[in-house]
Image (cartoon, rainbow, N blue to C red; front, side):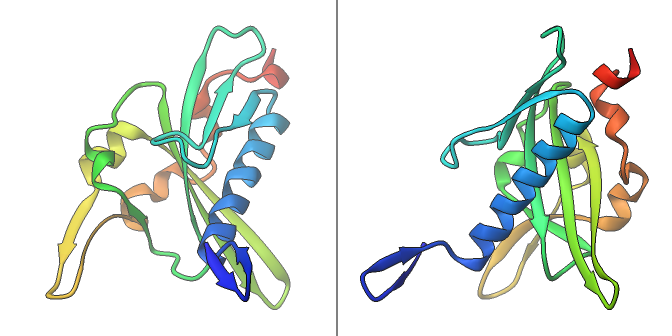
Amino acid sequence: MCKKGNEIMASKQQLTGMRGVYLVASELSRLGFIASPTSRSAIGADILATDQSCQNTFSVQVKTNARTFNFWLLTKKAKEQVSGNHIYVLVNLRHNKSGEMIEYFIVPSRVISEKMVYSKNKNSEWYAINLKDVEKYRDKWSIFGKTWSQF
C-alpha cells in the first residue's frame, strides 16, 4: 500500500494484480464456472472456482503483467504448490494504438513448477516463468474441463 498524506492507497502493482484476478474470474464466469476471488491475504489461491455441479473444483493463482510481457514473477512456493486442481492463469495487459489486448495463458501448476527459473544478481533474486515455456497454453481454458456452456 502507498501513503499519500494521511490516505493509504493501493500501489499500481497491487491494482494491476487485482485487475487480473477480476478479469480471470469474469472469464471463468463467462465460461459457466462459479468463480470467487479469495481474500488478498490468501496464500496460493487468488480464485476458488467450481463447475455448476460442484463436481470439479480449482484453486487459481493469477499473475498479471502491465509492462513486461515475456515473463511473470513467481514466489519460491510455486515449486511445491503442485496439484491437478491448482492452475495458474498468466495475464498480459497489452496496450497499442487500437486499445487494449488481454492475453491469457492457462497453465497447470505442474508445468509452472517444472519450468520456473531462478535468477540472482548481487542486489536481488527472483523466480519467474518465461513466455516461451507457456506459449502453448494461450487461451487454453479447456484445462478447466467441460464448462456449463458445453453441456
